[in-house]
Image (tube, rainbow, N blue to C red; front, side):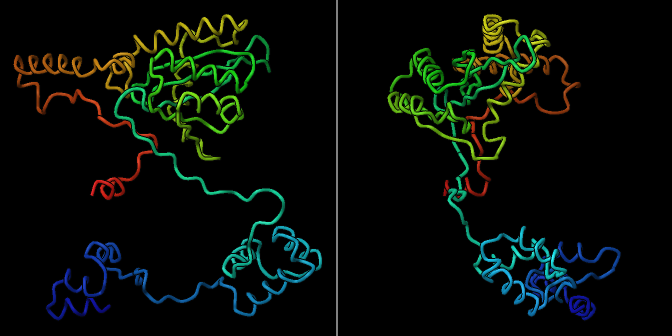
Length: 339
């Protein structure tokens, strides 16, 4: 190895590694117990893998895939048809890979091609800037019968700002829910982002018209991404795993509504939320968390003064971040935006 020769000749290992285009840490990782491994640099020359198709085999794949008989078919059908004829050229994944590399793999058919969806990123620095809402099932009196819980929460404070229980899912019910949330919070005319999933009630014309009327900005989760609406999903789990939640389902819709009234009252005003550093959502929503933390700090400081030998470190951090993100971007991206 050239680096080894340079070191034996009197060069410093770090400088020799830098000249070779790697760091000292990379060099040490490549040479455990003095056993030199192969060059792991991205620009290093490497032998072709033994399972790589030859140029003749690639041409055969392209000729077969673009032939009049196979052109209308996807590789998932081409390969089995070839196998029925006693012929094997390459796997389905190889067919797909070669067609992509040759710019021959395109969406066909009348269905709309999948569209790239940006990651929904929103930041809240105060209550009533970012809401998240969703609909979940509440079990009914018999198997297969459900009621539907509509619930809106404030992402910054985690407070439940509106909830309703209905027998069906519908866009008009969703529109009524959002209008009630705006009225209860007294935020008519405010700039609020409302985040939701891609269900039919969230995209119905009645609901969208109500959002436009109230001046609210809709935001949607990406298709197939289960954690883009994690705040609402987490709250649903808290709701359904309470000890008072009926294990055998609700007897009727009135019982479900009564349970949700009690749960929302407990959750907003009594529950010390772990992600809020153990203040209630209502206290955070009203801006009382700073005063509560100040009192807790005073209690901890007094306890440390009484028994300093019991405190090896600073007191507990009683604070909350000033920003709450939905899909927080990487730190590098935040630094670039700040610059």
